Length: 95
Image (cartoon, rainbow, N blue to C red; front, side, top):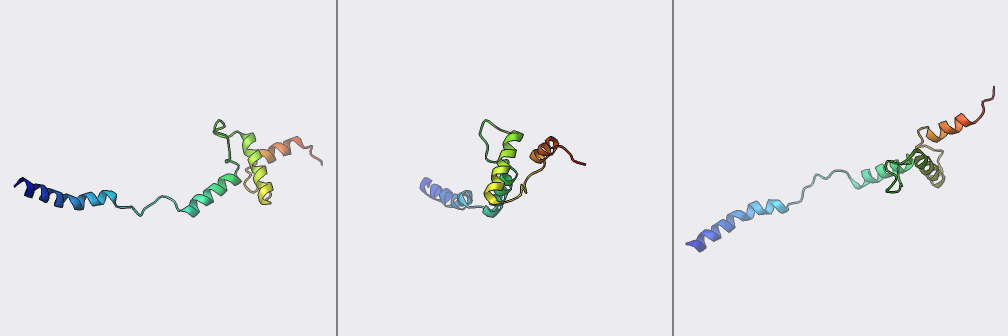
């Protein structure tokens, strides 16, 4: 009788245990979305940084933006004005 009960319990538990190993189809981001976010972060100068430089300093961000612009032949497209504003303040104005 114990053997019959054990077989019945094992047979009934199989369908419930199979759901634990089922793969879910709802993942977060696609590979293309992650690559686009990484490229945007590189253009904005946020990566790469050292692990001891988090959050990155303005000087690091400006340097990364310049390197990205040189490598990709852009005109500082990801720049938000930190390095450009600093350069504009140091240049004399002509009237």
